[in-house]
Image (cartoon, rainbow, N blue to C red; front, side, top):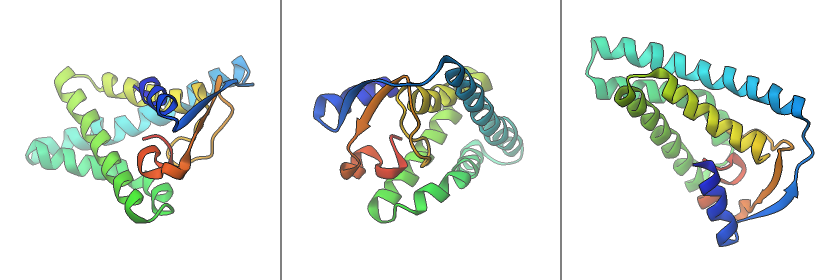
Length: 162
């Protein structure tokens, strides 16, 4: 999914492939471990624990909404700095992706499926393409991709590809 989005950015001039990055194999492995811990922890807390616990007490849709709001909370610091309409779009995108992760967990009957997708998204953005993840600064990736943050409504601006 991330590769398709980056491909669209490059094809439309919103992004540019700038060659090979200068990241070591060891760094790729360490970032992989870090993104696994981060992604899996968020999914276990928000969907594995919170959504599952809430859905036993209340209807499923409100449980999904509450767990999505909990998922969004730690991401808000990076989003609130954006301001304006792009901030609203970023918040809606986070709620949408959180809802998608919830649906995947329910349909696949697997927390692992949404953990894997969340990991893939963050790892590809940060380590493969060297772009910022959830408002963090970009790092050196396997390849170097430039994304035009002037078109922040489409690209996410400083918050990055969502």
